[in-house]
Image (cartoon, rainbow, N blue to C red; front, top):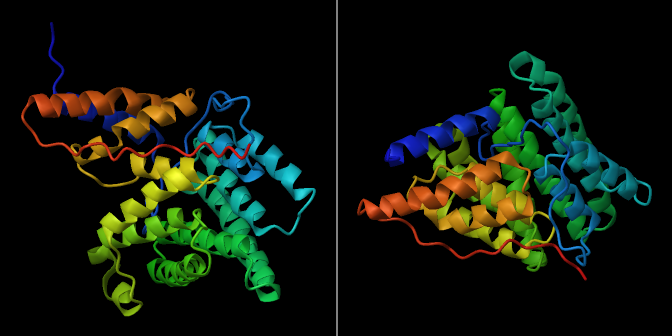
Amino acid sequence: MQTITLSEINSRLLQELEMFNSVSGLFVRITFFSILLFPMAHADPGCQVAPERQVIDQFMALNPGGALQQISQISSSDSENPALDLYRGMAAMVRAFRDDAVDAARRPYDDEALRYFAQAVKKANRRIESNPADAAARFALGASQSYQAGLLEARGKRLKALKLVHRGREELQSLITDHPDMEEAYMVLGLFEYFLGNNAEENGMSARLLNLTGDPELGLSYLERAVESAPNVAPEAARILLMDTSLSDNEMCRYADLSTQMNTRYPSNRIFRLLSELLPLQCRLAEAEGESVSPSVGVTLNTGCTG
């Protein structure tokens, strides 16, 4: 019987991830996947979730069309909701992967996404001016700025991206001070902390002048908190932990259980299926070879159920 080595597993995993991964941002890799079908997420039929969570579920299930339909339904009752443009921008990026757009062919999709993110920022600012206590608008503002920054940094506009990071992080830090129960904010704050901390040398003097240093471990803890406690964005926080961190192979064992949960929730998503198969095997082989692996953090994906 042929023995599968750890290096062979890693090679296979990297080959698969390279088929799907794309933009590497300053602090967030905005990664979605090309699609062949439009599968629905597997959910408890008795579980009622917020419309915003339904949008995120559609993205995780690789169904941008379904997400846009859901956005249209929300828009009919609240057309000025800044979160709608945030989601439309994300949908534009999903379509880029669906259409296999890369390099120059991808630019129109990113341009569309940037326009939507800019609209979300404007709408959020208007709402905040009229009602500074509007927590949802403040979250939409910080999240939109984070995605803007990721796209701009990928285009080489690092200083402009850093300024957006500075504003976005300040907004969200203020938000959780005023609203400690605003769990959605921890996903974006986790991105800020983890990726700023991991890219300190690349960010250079500009980041230090703006006090844009980060703490990777704090970032991971924020992302884990969002997985468990943020009803709307928990799946995106889980995706980031599984796909967009730069943890070593053995450190990734802390999220092996999470990969199984994501595969169960989104069974048609090929990358989650692959991770759920390979991560546990990789960890068992590492342990068998006497290597130290990180124990599971024991996070449970928030289902978003409201009733």
